[in-house]
Image (cartoon, rainbow, N blue to C red; front, top):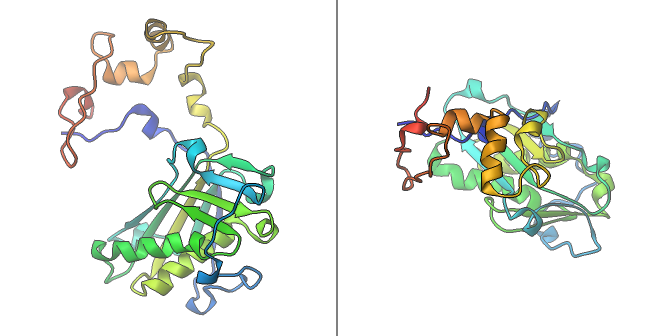
Length: 247
């Protein structure tokens, strides 16, 4: 059975800015001398102090860090950092946006059994950096960066700190690739796939609107041009309804 996801999970993200970190282990923290790093900086950033907020209650606590240990070294380009969305200095003060980080790690002796330590290193990047506040776990992160440290920070610096912490905490990590997604715009591919209050006011109108738009959800997941209730499987079980079969 397929474990396919709804149409919106397949939308391509807009292209990001790609950077390359120095992979020399002797330069893990090179260039970060003007930013404090360590347990002494664990704290909270209160209202009025923060310049940017990522995740949290305004975004239903859906921001996260996802770390995966990969088995093929060719799947990871060490030191590669891709940033999708605006840079910190492009944000207006007290901007709040959802956020996600997707990190790949590889090492010849690295296994999923050590994933907890690898993830901890990534989270410590935010937790132990001057001017950053972190609430929640990796699956529901709420981050804030202070106005005081913002002029000295960038997404590339944060990615460097995360990579350095991961390698320092778990030396079996030999390659790290990071993608940071700071939501600022909806991808153009889905502009005409989103119904607003100006388009529909009740479920019946929504059905008509979806058909008229030839929405992907109609073609892929409806039967006889009518929506079908989705049966959610138990954890680690496949989707049983035939409408989720790969075509």
